[in-house]
Length: 184
Image 1 (cartoon, rainbow, N blue to C red):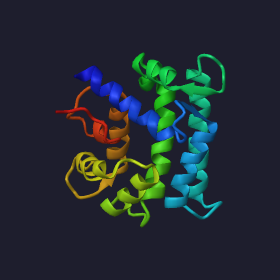
Image 2 (cartoon, one colour):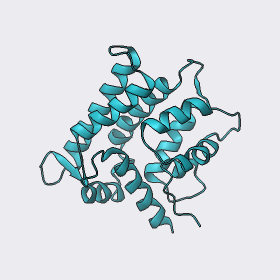
Image 3 (cartoon, rainbow, N blue to C red):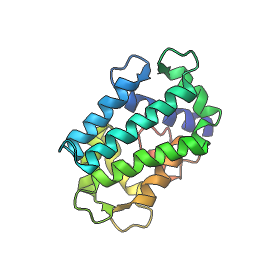
């Protein structure tokens, strides 16, 4: 079960970024995903949130390409991504720093009222932008809200993202983020 959970979540993360479904992620996929988030959460070109999203996604892509693109074709195949993640790339401090930068930029842009928390409504807008299945939204929000205050804090989202990428424990809140968790 634990290996199945990790593989399902890694595949779910890959699918979020494989915009055209060709089995590869590329710089254009990351640019497109950042664009979707900007359109939904920070539509004003040149605004701090818009620029932070674009910059964070570009930097994460560069790192993934440099570290995971084993055949040097400028794209990361599903196989390359899964193999790298299963071999521990998701626990590398540089990788986690890039993930934290993206997660922080998403959090800041999703926190539309600037209160330091993501409400359920703000979370729904974020999830629609990354095209996560509708049925995952409530479950993911409820699982991420570990303190039960009805909002998601920056730390809850970061911890959840780390769990999504590395945890084999279905009780960890982040393992529900992409709605692919194979828990029976």
